[in-house]
Length: 242
Length: 136
Image (tube, rainbow over all chains, first blue to last red; front, side, top):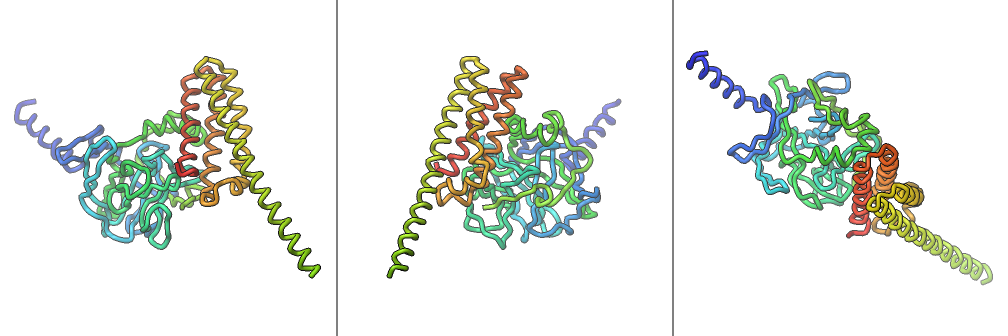
């Protein structure tokens, strides 16, 4: 390859990376303070395998899909109002990073890892102590609703601002799932923003993951191509919300 | 007059027995909690002295206390301001059973690292519940 062709390849690669960070894997600590880990880009689909359309999502309903691992639940919510933009968040290790905003026409669709950053409470097929509290309901965890609440120890997270901590024992925001909203209104998960606790989760819930997924290898398997997305009420037999 | 007296006496009797039932449940909980503490100490001692028999005996003792926490009876036992959170207590009991069952499986398989990790998780469940229910 001559010098000119080499430069062309470098320039083309740089352009691709700049347009779609999900093309690369690994941690990115960019100059703008963003902490991001890219995983395989997967499409959110319903139980029948049909693509989820952002505009078809019911408002203020918690949907669940597993990403980036087969056993790591994430919540998808279509909020009643447009989300805030460029929220600076801080991990419990003190790292600063920026949550850009929700996606969709109204910028109201958000996704977060549904593993509480306090003691890793998460939805299981049996029950869920963590969910979004619609604006029509009340919660003991915070004086306003329209927030995400972990009912184990009453931590509250701002659903419209990168899941930053509003109250309770949690010391860092929920991790965000970075979503891409395509021109055809479909939704794609491309990575995780924030300091994740996936390895602690696999270690702490080994017996439970064995029960539901068959073993650690199956639980850690990375999700590929698509992620089945269902309502929390279909994912868990019982929803506990205080 | 006679009817009123009988009604009053019956009311006192009913109130007394309800109070006694509440006290009985609380006494039972305190007894269970002390047994759980003994069980955890036994498991820890087994782990530190490499005695799988002590660990298994501790698990058996611990699991003997879970029935009350797992049942609806838990509502009568919790502090009044925490009764609403009985599902959380039940979930904790479920997790205690899960980790203690796994500890036995891990011991039998000779995976002591996993067994000791189960002990850590049992302790975490205990403290998690105390933080919540006892407003620690």
